[in-house]
Length: 309
Ligand SMILES: Nc1nc2c(ncn2[C@@H]2O[C@H](COP(=O)(O)OP(=O)(O)OP(=O)(O)O)[C@@H](O)[C@H]2O)c(=O)[nH]1
Ligand SMILES: [Zn+2]
Image (cartoon, rainbow, N blue to C red; front, side):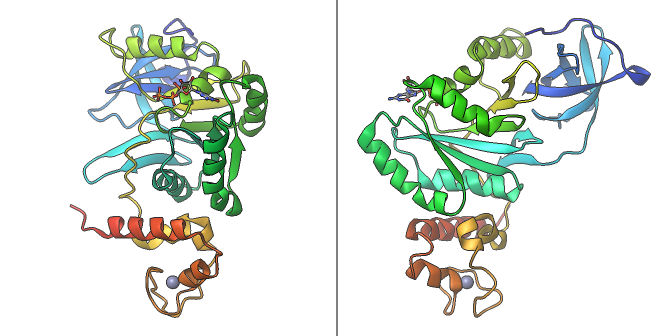
């Protein structure tokens, strides 16, 4: 990786760039030629996130971001107080879970809802297929997700890395994919498999952005191929997935298995929780929607209906 270094100046002293990491008020911007330099935002607020296309101006060895291009999408989570952006301009979100530790379906559902709300294609991967029995159980819990049309990939990253790399490459090729997952599922293993030397790169980036103080985990963009067409973004923060930015009445539309049954309930403003003549509840009883999914929907609906401060 090349941090800083000279590159051709653009029109009016402004150059194009891609935000590849950010930490506090510092960000790392990559030029079209592949040089990387530390940039600061122009104003007080730092609005740029990883994946943003920006216009920046050189000042000494560093740069100032003057403008952030309009975004295709912005993947973020929001709790009562804070909005935390993961990344912008994504093609896909890959949620990596594993046979062990047992994954939380609630957490998985939250990440998928957040992706749907921004119209980003979700993909699920279940790692550790070598742990046969827990894997079978976990796989069975994912059947409703397969049925609703999500890609679910079985992986064994530690034992069959070469095969998994091929499978993953097919799904990631030419795209920008944000990788999310609970701790211990194998996210570092996956990133290092796709991007040899990723850990070393992360350390270098953290030190550069953090003025060498200490290393922290930040959202980081990696190129998978030399042509810089396929990218994966490694991001922490799967555990606390606030969805406060989503209106409860929009929730069912962000859950494909529920969405399929919308539009025919007896009441036009049906909340699909307990009303008579509800087609969603009807589908749950008939086995078309998994009971676990309806439970998650009701819990999320209650949560999102709480008064906002
Ligand atoms: N049995 C088995 N273990 C695996 C597999 N892939 C990864 N692991 C192990 O799972 C553990 C967690 O893997 P990591 O890649 O560190 O997981 P992570 O998601 O980055 O976890 P954090 O660093 O806590 O965020 C490690 O001990 C890996 O060796 C697999 O296919 N099978
Ligand atoms: Zn209904």
